Amino acid sequence: MNFPNHLSFISLQREQSRSLENFFGRSQDNCTRLSLYFTENYSATNQTIRTLLQGSRREEAYTRLQTYLEQKASYNYWKKIDYSLYNSSIPNGACCWYTIAQLMSRYCTGKLLDFRNHDDIAVGCSYLRGVVDNTDNPRTITSVEYAIEFLQQCYQDPSTHYPACHELHGNLLVPLISFPCALFYKQTAPREARMPDSTEEWLKLTSASCISDPSHEHLSLQQAHYLAVDPNFCILSGHHYWVFS
Figure 1: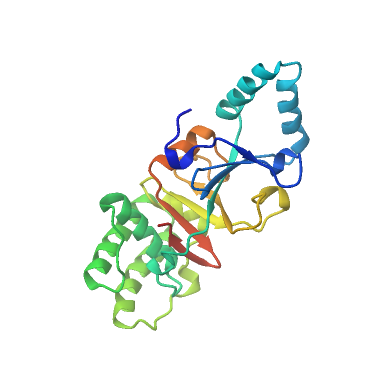
Figure 2: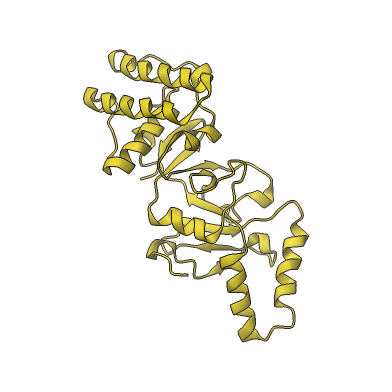
């Protein structure tokens, strides 16, 4: 499979272990990684690969493994944390709604909004009004309407803090946006669900527009390629949402 230069998974790295859970593919700029997704029955996946390669000559084994990885395997998708646009969403409790507006603005115009600018706030509010069309949940609709009022109020009084009752849960963010996007978060789950390389901060894909089942955080290689071609990503870390640069 041909990947753009920033997502050429050409090598496997290893962390002091021969276990498959410690292998991952990395992009050339080392800001994106894929690791194999394992169900709770880790040994079953391990055995599938062993059976696939058993009895294969060395030159056949690579082709068989490559076919499996491209067509059958599921992956965890990782991004190195990026703080450069941390303040693109004002950290006042409404960061989830600022981030939705930023994702929509970047997709539509290629530019981000400045929520300290009155005209940009008006544009952001218009994007949020469109979000109402993507949900029939009364509570979410109420929160969107409140967020629109809050963005305008906050311009007048920056000390205003957004009430927790109207904050948006992470797994609802992507479904509210009708454009391609994805949410990454800092993983604190058990060892097998974390990035094998612990020397840097890595964020795991938790929701993406190309994954139909919102309960699934893993994806195929084709879906990873789709995301990489036109990235429109955001971050959830330390209870704050913001967009990737």
